[in-house]
Every structure is written in C-alpha cells, then in structure tokens.
Image (cartoon, rainbow, N blue to C red; front, side):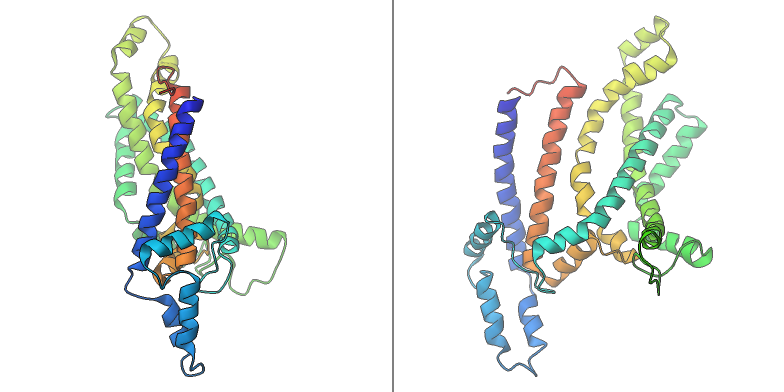
Length: 327
C-alpha cells in the first residue's frame, strides 16, 4: 500500500507540472492583455502608463518567453508566493480564501443531497425495472442530463422568484437594502442559497441516478444473485447486502470527482445568481486574463483532483478485497 501510494504521488507531481504548464501557456497566448488594458485606461491622467505596465509585466515574468515565464511563476509558487490579482491588486491566496467558503457550503449540501437522493432512487428503479418508478426516474434523469444549467436556472428564477415570489429576485447573497447582522444576516444568506442549491441538486442527480441503476441491473442479473434467490435469501438482503455492495465498486470511480467539486464552485450558477464564490471569481479572472489568480486556482483544483483520484483507487481496495494496491 505504501509503495503504491508513493508511486502514485510521484506520478501526480508530474501531472501537476504538466497541467500547470499547459494552463500557463494557454493564458500567455491569449490575444488580450489585461495589464496593458488596465494601464491604458488611465492614459489621459498617467502619461507614463506604458513604463508602469512594462514593470508589472517584468515583475510577473510576462516579458520573457513562455518557458522562462512558467519557471519564474513555479519558483515563486513553490515559495508560497502566488502574487497579487491583476484585477484588484488583492493577494491571490487571500482572494481564494475569501471566495471559497460560500462555494464549499453550496457544493457540500448539493453533494449530500445528491448521494441521499440519487443512489436510493437508482436502486429502486433497478429493482422495479420497467415499473412506474423506473420510467419516472428515467424521464427525470434525461431532463437533468439534457437541460443546460443556465436554461434551468433561468426557469427556476422566473418561476419561483419572479412569478411566485417565493424568493428574492435580486442577485447576491443579501436582499436589496438589507442592513441587519448576526442571525438575521445568516438566515437572509441561507434563504438566498436555497434556489441555487435546488438548481445544482436537480442538475446533478441524473448522472449518478442512471449510473447506479445501470450497475445495479447488471449485478442483479448475475448468477450468484439468482443462486441467492434460489436459496431463499431475503429480498432485502439480496438487494442491499449482496447486490449493492458490488454496485458500489464502479460508483467509487464517479465519486472520485467529489473532492475537487467541493472546492471548484459553479461558474454558471454563481454567475446567474450573483453569488461571489470561487466559481464567480475564477470566471472573471479567466475572462480578464488575470494570470496570477487563474494559475493559483487551477493549481489548487489540480491538486484536489489528483487527490480525489488517489483516494478513489484506495477506496477500491476497501469495497473490493480482490483489488491489490501493492504493485
């Protein structure tokens, strides 16, 4: 186990280097330059804007070639220095730390609801194949997979906020003109999170539900399940003790994406609802070509993605004793 983990960690380090280099190269080849655009906007009041812009470009290694610039960024990153955001001059680490909590809370709630709802419904649909529950979950799954997030979010805002008036139609985490504090602020923010969490949950259920149903059907048709039925094993024990235990093996692969998903936020949902989480901030940074923030964010997500895959591999050994991790 230790040998396997060390081997995977070494591979992960090379993957992180590769991903960060490709990301850096893509940002460097963007046609727009946020640094020059920012200083150019002050050209009338600042006749020396070009010199100042060049100094900033040199400071971040953007005047050199891509390879030299990447290793300049990498050297600073290994020392814990990710620079300051081009957009607002805020320290990148502090900016990430401030924007992550709301995205993490939303993603954590959505993940819990996804697991609690999708897996039982997938099992129920497989056990009652071609029944009413199976057809209903199939339709629901197709809707969840097919509907674009921006379209479904727009429908939810139109129906629940504009037409029914159940939620505040204003963007952001606080109601317009709100000036309370303490618990009042907490409940106001919680109320504003219900609708985006609802949208994210509905859109995330389809894939896991369908995946659970498909794998459960495959296991239920296996020979050892028919043998268990012939021996008179209780139906509940067959479903949850024998069948679901083997269904959990392929589910582990899908659940590997949960860890990075908790910290990545949602670009579209946070933009539509005006929630300034990590998805909202990283989207604006990407559009603006804010290389320091975008690089730090992508490094952050890459590390958690690699950790998620490593944890999934280890979980295989826990759910299936036949899997050996020593090689």
